[in-house]
Image (cartoon, rainbow, N blue to C red; front, side, top):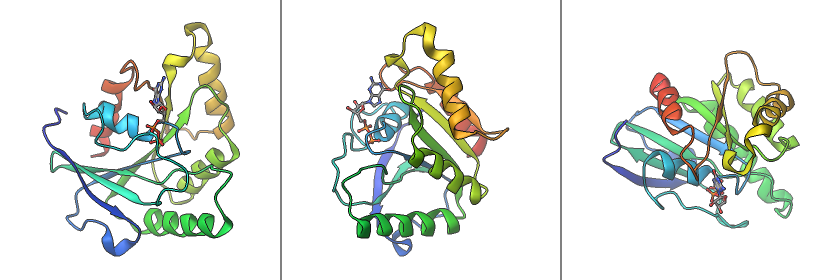
Length: 193
Ligand code: GDP
């Protein structure tokens, strides 16, 4: 898809703020700092539409980016910061449930993981949570540029095994640095949109 228009429409904290134009949506989930914003920016050829390097403690919002007036990327607040309080964690959980459980225009979720590390318990929980809602999940193994060629297969296998990726869910090697996987990502997205 040639992206000619990309804009942030709203940073939502609750359902009543979600856009209501019924365009299809693809959400991005993952640990804080895993590379969600970089993924969006790479796909739409913008340096900084999606805010990168989000800091812990910043307001947790669902960020809706409208692309070509055709669909939305929804950047879901990251998880995995040890420092967040129990109250904040509960607020985050409620927001996730409200969104993933009810959002009819949501077509698929990209679960972004860092290929350098074994998926964490939080990653596994997130994958299971999404499958619980019967959502198609694409696991995006990002930061591939950080892994030597000879170790790629081993790292990918570890990601698939640790998450227990279900048959039918795709795993996409990706790098926001080199652009690896970008065309394949669009190919996959086009199927869902
Ligand atoms: P977010 O919090 O999930 O939105 O993560 P960001 O997109 O802000 O990325 C966090 C950090 O990882 C930033 O310093 C990015 O430059 C870096 N990063 C993201 N993707 C890649 C990648 O594919 N390769 C490399 N080498 N660095 C990346």
